[in-house]
Every structure is written in structure tokens, then in C-alpha cells.
Amino acid sequence: MDYAESLSEGRLLRRYQRFLADIELGAGEIITAHVPNTGSLLGCLEVGQGARLSRSSDTTRRCPYTLEQIQVGTVWVGVNTHRANALVGEALKQGAIREVSGYARHRPEVPYGQQRSRIDWLLEDQGKSICYLEVKSVTTSLEPGIGLFPDAVSQRALKHLEELRDCVVHEGARAVLLFCVQRSDIRVVRPADAIDPAYGRLLRAVMRDGVEVLAYGVEPTRTGILWGPRIDVHCP
Image 1: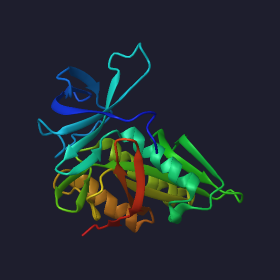
Image 2: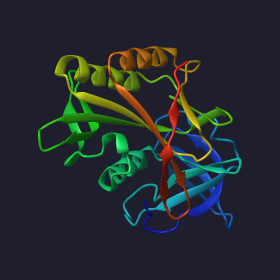
Image 3: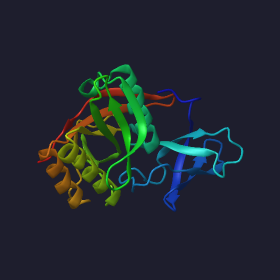
């Protein structure tokens, strides 16, 4: 995935009201950027960290800048959760996700389920076989090489697991949860049991019921985001 133009760089001063962050740009200018992430961004919000931003050409936007990446140590972490769905969409078109390749149609944001959800990607083939593909963005790592999800208690994430399980149990369809790991230093993904134990319990339960769980890494750069290798998912 390429950005429309190279990202601007600065340093993080603070995040507040969840969706806003103050960033100091290279020339000393302080701007307020939109933060497109509903999570806590645990481990990614130290004052003074490097920040990369995109700028919208829409002059009516209150915040022209969008926070795209945060530097954690020597690694850049993609914090824009909307990018994860788009990255997976590109990977589907290119056949880069071997486990779900071969479907003729990839439809985004399709309504489904008893709880009125929207599946990130509905995959269909010529024989009308269906695969429900839910994407989750992973940004948190509290131990070297280990990515954690979620980074805060999330009722929405629980609902999505329940919807995926219903697809398998009640429809006999295929359901896949894909963790898009938006940093290049992760070798394994685990449920964040210490942060949201209910999510960890339900994730293990839906896996036993037939929901497939995958993880793939990406590498954020200043000019775009590179699709990476498959990563192991461990649920000890």
C-alpha cells in the first residue's frame, strides 16, 4: 500500500479525548491531528516519540492531519486501524493470504449476524461458498517479539467473535479472524489475557468451535505499508 504522498514527521506531545493528538512538527509548529484508533494504544504513547502523519486535501476538515505511525524504539507502528482493512483488501486481490485465496469476490463491510454487525470482508467463490473474514489491528507489544490483542477491554471485539462463531455453528460457513500486526518486530500473537480476560476465554472457545485464526505482519514506512509474512498465533 502506497500513501498518496510521503508522510510528514514530528514528535508526539500528547493524546487526548481518544481521537486527538498534539504533534510538534520539524519546524517547531504544533498541530492537532486526528487519531484513527479507538484502542488505548498501550505502549505506543510516550511523550517525545516520533510520529508520522498524512495530510488531507479536504479543506473542510477540522484536523487536516491524521496520525498514521508512532515510533516505538527503532520500530514504526501503524496506529491507523482503517489501514488494516485496506491492507487486507489489497492482499486478497494479490493472493498474498494463501489460507483464503481462490475466492472470486471480496466484498467489504457487508451486514451480517444476529447482532447487526458488518463483516470486514465477505469472500465468495463461483460455487457460492462463503467465508466471513474479520480483521483486527495489533499494535501492542509488552514483551519482545510478542503482539497482544486487544489493548483495552473491548465489548465490540467480543461481539465480533460471537458473530463469527454463529456463522460456523448455525450456517455451516467458514469464518476467519485475521490479526493484522502493524509493526515488524512481532513473531507471535497472543490474546491479552491480563488486559481483557473475557476476550481470551472467548477466543479459545470460538477456535474450538471452528473459527480459524490467522496473523500476518506488515512493515510501515514513510511512503507506504509493506505486506509481510504469516505470524504464529499462540493461545496457551
